[in-house]
Amino acid sequence: MPPRLASLLGASLSAPPHAYPISSFLLPCLQLQHRAASILSSLSDNAGAYNKRIRRGRGPSSGKGKTSGRGHKGQKQHGKVPRGFNGGQTPLEVVHGKRGSVNVFSVDMTPVNIDRIQDWISQGRIDPSRPITLKELRDSRCITKVKDGVKLLAKGSEQLRIPLNVVVSRASAAAISAIEAAGGSIMTRYYTPFAIQRVMRGKSDPINSLGSRESTAESLIQGGFQNRLPDPTSRKDFEYYRDPAHRGYLSHLVPEGHGPSLFFKTPNTGKPVRRSGSGSKAVAGENRIF
Image (cartoon, rainbow, N blue to C red; front, side, top):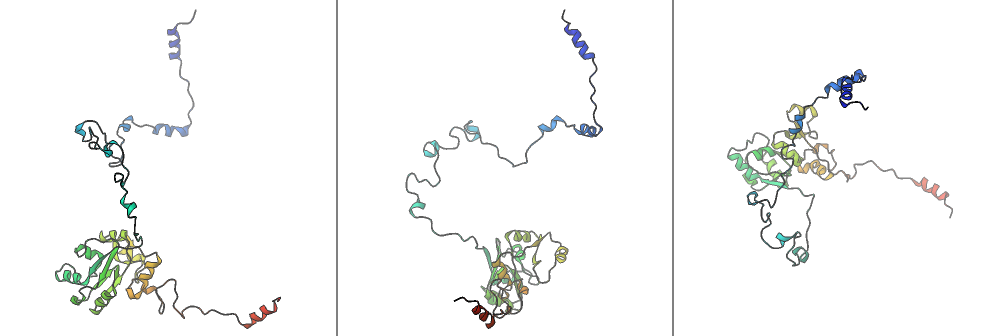
């Protein structure tokens, strides 16, 4: 006679569970593996990480119902239209072609004239006793937008009446002459677009960097600024700010009698080249076969 189910269940329940030995080094790991299941319901992505999908054709209250935002009839409502499609007519870019090019190496300098700076000084909006940098010009609204730097021009230079200390990205030769004729000084230095943003926020020194004449890493740290200004890396920028004619801040690196170029050497400044004498020609003649 087969055994009863109740007796089998009772025997299985009454039997003690098998004890498996657990190593001591696994106990801390087992005790730490406790996590509430409610954390799964509170997980979410960062705000703005994704946009909500637009559900089209779901009624007029959604704003994208009925025609689903395509309008009524026509090719744009029934299908897709390629970019620049003119209804079968020959596109203008095919008829006339594309002419010209974009110079990727050009820089967008914000111009500022001497007469405008003098006008701002007369109104009391700029302090002439302090160095006039990009930050002072922007904060006083003498200029409104700076992208790659500021270039000083000489328009209205005859109105300049007081000496100024100006620090800009570039300056014309006439502006340099006008500033120095009034007893002032001018210095051009290198800026990048990101460096200009940090200067405007007060996070970088608008004048000094590691390449400046009397500047060290310790002095820049003691200045209280978070970031330091970068120095030029390309040959074109490096040669511009090494040129004393441009009043570049790296002109002190050029030895006396040398030019600012990194490639062309100044005549009679290099090492003399020793030319082989007549003895080598005699030896070469002895070794000739014919």
